[in-house]
Length: 160
Image 1 (cartoon, rainbow, N blue to C red):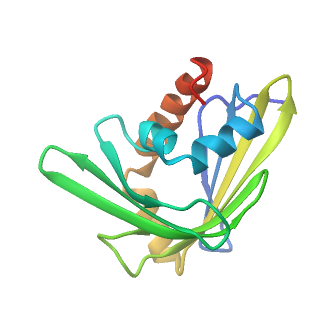
Image 2 (cartoon, rainbow, N blue to C red; image 1 turned 45 degrees about the vertical axis):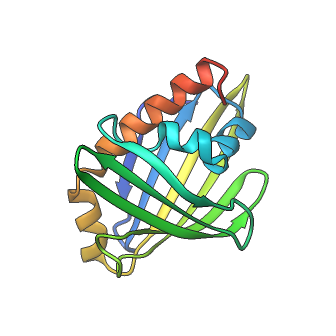
């Protein structure tokens, strides 16, 4: 099996879906915790140039969340609802408040590769191909790559 050390970001040709895949030297339980514990999430999510502040975070089926990423005098708000939180799967909505009509439905699941390694799969369904392509043009890969690199370091340091 090939190890994916950098995130692959792919657009589905038939549906307005973005798929992200990346391997981590971490267990599925560690990755689940990194996505559901607000203090840990704030440490790794997004580009290095941003700092995250969690406004509220209720990581359970039926819960909701909101965080603000900031840089200098800029702030970017994000919010959503947890539709399902299970042992190796999260289904949630995700909205960037700068584009409030652009809600995506995200599904994340964690594939145990053995030997303390896990493949993260993330799928985001948006309402149109135009919306999907705007996300892809937004520079999202910087936030994905830098954020997941931070998560990898946190796992290596035993902080997750």
